[in-house]
Image (cartoon, rainbow over all chains, first blue to last red; front, side, top):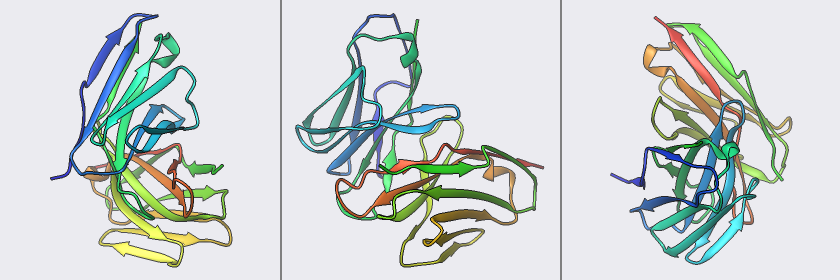
Length: 113
Length: 113
């Protein structure tokens, strides 16, 4: 059974804190993604990675960075958390190639107070 | 970049009726159109997809149609059941580049028993 696992289901952090969201996949996928989900806005791409140590900005990268030191792990970093980063964060992975399915983690609900 | 619009944002149907969700996309290079279902507390999961060389695809009670000329694609659910209640996302993926998946804003479907 394929799996994308996010380290936390719920997180509460204070404004200004550095926050790490971790994601691990066991499918040996090349591509990994971080999305943010907000009501009425759908899934917006923050960053994606197509290989180890490689990353590309998505549609809303401001205030975020990422790290991919190993193929199976993709981390999202909030350098200095702000209240407007309160959201649901979803990690996904996908095999390289056309028309391949994306597999999602269960999501991390982050609240910044 | 690609822009995917999805309608309606909410949809209520009686059990046994049909439900239709419509999406439009902007990038003519997109050639893969998956649909994802997100149940409460879970990440999105692929339910059906269609490629640009096909006009229609069916899987039991679910069907998807694609009109490449008009850049429209739709999800049809027949004989709806309470377990169909969820948020549905359409998406579009281009054939080239990093094949970034762009999602619609989501439709919350409620099936009333």
